[in-house]
Amino acid sequence: MRIGRILKNIFVLLLLIFGIIIFCYIYSNYNYGNYIKSVSEREKTSFTRDSDIKYSSYSSYKLENKDFNDAMFFQTIQVTPNTPYRVTCMVKTEDVQNIEGTTGGAHISIADTTERSICLDGDNDWTKLEFLFNSKNRTSVNIAFRLGGYKEKVTGTAWFSDFKIEMGVADTSNEWNFGCFIFENIDVNVDVNGKVENVNLSMDSSEIQEMKENMERFANSFEQMSKGKMNVKYDTIVIEEPITTISIDEDNGYYVDPNDVYDQINDIVQKNEYDHIYVALKMGDKEKGNEILIQDWIGLGGMEYWGTGFSNIRLPSDKNNYIYVYDPRINLFPEEVFIHEFLHTLERNSKDYGYDVIALHDNSVYGYEDQRLTGLRNWYEDYMNCNVEGANGEKLGIPAEMFTHKPPHNSNFNYSYELNEFKEPENIIEEIRSLFSRATSIFAL
Image 1 (cartoon, rainbow, N blue to C red):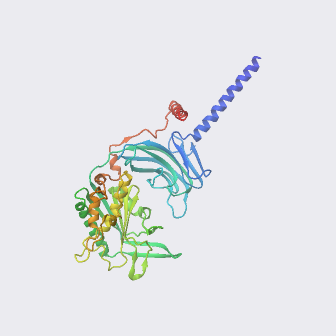
Image 2 (tube, rainbow, N blue to C red):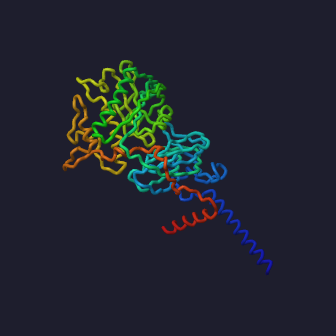
Image 3 (tube, rainbow, N blue to C red):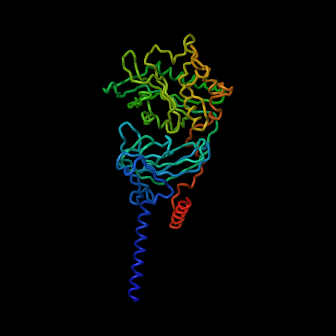
């Protein structure tokens, strides 16, 4: 009897030890802590914790897309409105591939938005990713560590590690720093009626000078037209290295996306911390019959260079076009395109902050028409001063505070505060507390 009882106790003990081993294995390989897993399509992605491939002492967070998919793990973070935040992590990738024409990959983002860091694709050893964002009018955000994208799906594997989030201090001055990149050359392949053709164009010295002069006029005019609500500091940078890739969509035809010029401008952008970026380029020459097909735009705004406003300024294909030339008989407002495209950024920012702002293109709805010498200058001036009269006599336009709501930069984190949300448990006691806390929250639901 005693031997049987001893054997029974040994069996129970071995079963318990085996159970603990199995639990520890499952916990160490599949524990994603306070993160929520999300996929676009089921059965295409595996989530694991990897104790073999890791950056530090903690097991890395591994995402493997076995087929084209968008997958992420995210955590809801409480934030203070109108405050800059910086999220960093280490990422390693293996054979991350995009669908042709898309630019997804391993990155940090705010789930359900287009706000994100740069994306890593292909094969990359451990690389530091950095994502800056402003909380705007939000009190919480879902910070996602992602393999794919908002509209992109990729295959391959990514390992994430060493997460960190910091709260910075907003710059509330009304001085904006603009960078105008003038691309002297473009050498791209485009599709013309199903046939790939090369378009090779160069600006001449007079066209480059026109862009420089209009940037100067933009700075002076915007300060004057906003009645001092915004001051403009700017650089004009001529880039000789040609643009060699160009993007396309149904609404605009061909245009320059931030990814098309990233290698040429990013170091300059980061060094100077621009609040808005212009890319000026030539996309056609009527005399030579050399054209890139577009949807009839001369400027294109409302885009973002990873959190910073980004606009295209296109030179006309016809050299006899005076749109950028100051001439008292023909054009007193050649900087109009620069002002129009930047106002699209303020329009978008206003909506992101929760304001019900009127559309920039609705000038005729409110009785403003294009004037022969000054274009829509009166409309822009009233729009930026919230002086457009509504149907009930109310004053409409860009809210005054938007002229101090600028994109975040690393200088906003000179005196940063690190939050604890992404901290990993450092010992078994913290692991148990974390596990108990999650179990309690689950049963509380």
